Length: 484
Image (cartoon, rainbow, N blue to C red; front, side, top):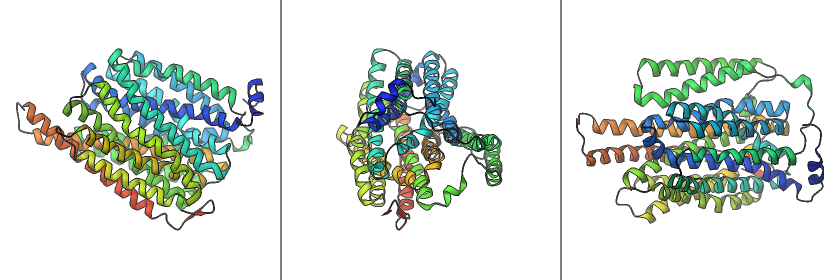
């Protein structure tokens, strides 16, 4: 991809060329957000259609996030070495192929496997999107551009539930996957013909830390599998303790490998940069909190509020509408005043919104649900754009791919931990309530559900508050000439 094609040569002469680059990269972000939010809405329907349960169906989300999270640092490193455009194009192809397999799945097992294939493409897209954008925009516009990306995420997550609900009403759950196929093809063509060719890199730098990548993947898979199966198998069971021990062993092996190799997969020195480290930690915790709500809310609306898939999709869009409205403004403000006040305020809104969601019940009015989801959307819109700008602005341009991979890694780690912890808390509380009841009544089942739901979301409030405290600690650091 080092030779310019004729279309790219023509487009590069246009005054708005860099915004065409932005649009082509943002299409991948939109597609990923659309897919994720539409899948969440479909979980109750898939649970019924494939005759499974909440603990099993969560693996439709968890498997995707687990593989993506494990592959993100490697995907970012590959982008730095062999070209971000090339790896980004490969990501679209992988996502398209995986989506096609998902649309053909007929069992929960084959669906989870297909989601794992889809995840390899998703990792290549997520790890390189921020780097491609920051490569092509000046520093003084970074907050604005990343704020606009936040709006794109909002549009995707806003469109996904509504589209998913509509497709589920007209067709069946397979439709939410095959809609990704034409979107991925469109994204591939846009990136191929619009983005400038990858710069030529020094062959001496083209070393890949395969051993480090393997250690990291085993560590993440062991840890996240333990989180996901802990409630079902018992936290002190031999299987779960073995998985936790395995994750610790491979974590130590990974750190040792990254310290001794000349060109590591994950540059640990980046974490000595306080704005970078604090931004990633608070960002990860924000997604743990967010996914407590995203995972449990569709089941609450279906099982307790007795809403249809279309209604669930509409309600789940509320969060995205508010995020879409706030994210661009937050990005522009971060260019002027820095990220500190915006990120801290955003996490405060998120904590309050999740708390109100936790307090919902079968008698809650529609406006109460909308209010809670709106607060969460406002909080996430205020937080994400300034936080991403802070993280990406704290590193040298040569490290953008790795930094983008770590940023996406922290985000996905938060998503998968939020999903796993929410389900673990929900199932532990629900099963504990029903223990000893041989024939639970409908009221018993409903009460047990609400007990688990309430505790899972209260834990989400705790994660948001912890993220807020970490974000507070970044005050006084200087980023891009502004105080953080």
